[in-house]
Length: 372
Ligand SMILES: [Zn+2]
Image 1 (cartoon, rainbow, N blue to C red):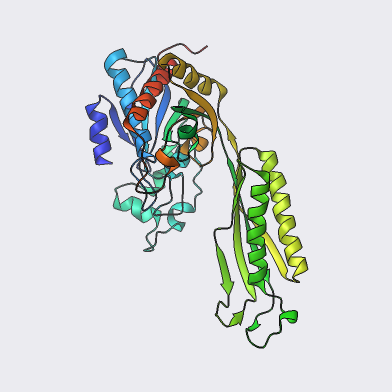
Image 2 (cartoon, rainbow, N blue to C red):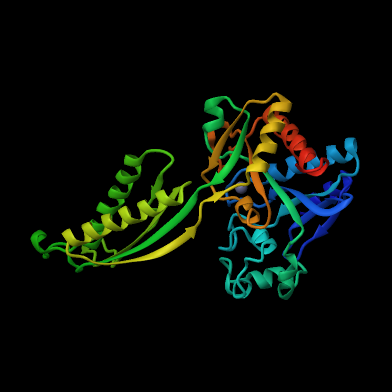
């Protein structure tokens, strides 16, 4: 963050640290309303150098170039470097952007702890931030937000487009399933008498995969966790808990999937005489970004002579939170091999340069010109 601050100063921006530690670089305009661009500076553990950080760098390059060549904007321009988006230390994702939107629950700062038992509130105090002042991060002055980001998938590389104009973010839903059968001795409990919770869970895992494959892209559904009790190699499982994560850009499809997945769980449980409980996990609504901001990015692509395509984001981003505060959209640049959240993630330099040019042209439209 110290480096981010120094760089913001170097490119002519005023630096501010907000109440949760995000850094904001500001180029004051004639008017107080703010056109903001940026992303997060954290990443997942064992992640790469491009997710998030490249978006901050692209936004800084675009705003720094506008400051140097176009001078003072009509609307104030800000570069946002979110302190936390990925939950790599605390299970608190979108922390910086949620603080801006006033979406942090009162119990979170003291309640969420890292692997060492340090709460976010304590971690904030160690950094010189006051958890009691968290509400001060809230913003009411944003006119637009544009988030540049790596695609983290293979679409742009496959189509040969240089820019993805992201007009929506998939909704994410989760179900928590608990199956109770009867445990017993792996040798003496006859097969005909078994009510094996793990075998039921296994059938659900395959059923979830079949269901998502049957619907085709962009539907995805994943069982990422299974917990089995008692868990001995020579014991029949009496209890199995599993999670189902499923995603799609359309809320109606998510609702259908929810019904189908619950139906699958119920039928497996009935056939195997297992007691079943299903509870709601994650509920992240699908987001549609602002049509005018998407159009501004598309016009910037045309002006730059760069091939682009509209596309959804299959991953969550700060823009879906900040999009609740103001018109927002995202701009993707290609990810080499579609790889992300890995040390070998990469975006090639010419693609980054095209992305910066399109972003600068977009921000010029939004901050230097009267809005239609
Ligand atoms: Zn990211």
